[in-house]
Amino acid sequence: GNSVTQMEGPVTLSEEAFLTINCTYTATGYPSLFWYVQYPGEGLQLLLKATKADDKGSNKGFEATYRKETTSFHLEKGSVQVSDSAVYFCALLNNAGNMLTFGGGTRLMVKP
Amino acid sequence: DGGITQSPKYLFRKEGQNVTLSCEQNLNHDAMYWYRQDPGQGLRLIYYSQIVNDFQKGDIAEGYSVSREKKESFPLTVTSAQKNPTAFYLCASSAGRGYTFGSGTRLTVV
Image (tube, rainbow over all chains, first blue to last red; front, side):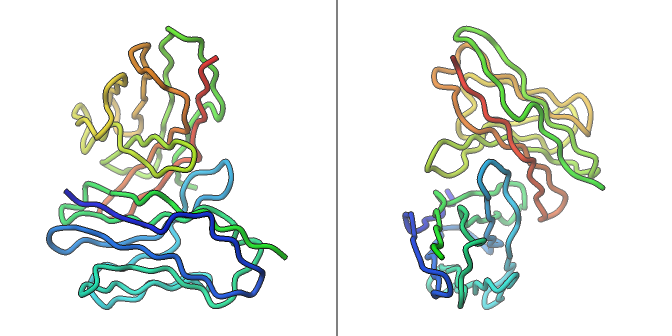
C-alpha cells in the first residue's frame, strides 16, 4: 500500500533560520502530494500541493518540489518566523483520488 | 462561506458509553472522511463515504460506526467497544482532489 515517511520532530529553529522538513513516499502510479499545516487545537489547512513530477508547490514562502526519481517532497522555507510554529504533515493522494495517506507529522518550534 | 463544521469542540465521555460526533459540510462535496489523531502521531483513517448511503471501513474502524443518510452529514459514533477512544477526531470532505478539514473534536474518556 501507499505510505509517507516524514522526519521526526520536534524541529527547533531560531527566527530567520532555513527550514527543511524531509518527506519521502511509497506509492503505485502517479500520486498527488501535499503539505498540510496544523496550528494548536485546530484542524488541517492545506499549505501547498503538487500533482505531477517536477511540479513545485509554493505558498507563504514555503516550497516543495515533487521528485519522482527520489520519491521525495521535502518542505523548505528560507526564513522562518515564530508564527510558523505548528505541526506539518506530508500527504499523498492516490491515483483514484479517494485515499489520502498522511505521514506522522513534524512539529516545528521557532524561537524569537 | 462554505466549510465543514464539527461539534462539539470538546467532548467528555464516561467509560462504557457511546458518543456521537457531528460533522456537517455545505460544500456540496460527495466524499467525506473521519480521521483519528493521537498525540505526536499522524492521522489514521477510520471510515469514509464516497456517496450518500454508502461508506467503507478505513484502517482503524473497530469500535466505531458511521452513517451517511444525507450528503451534508457524516456523524461518527464512538462505541463502548472502542478500547482507547481518547483522541482528536478530524472530519474532512473532498470533491476531486481538494480536501477540506473541520476544526476537530477532542474526545476524552473520564
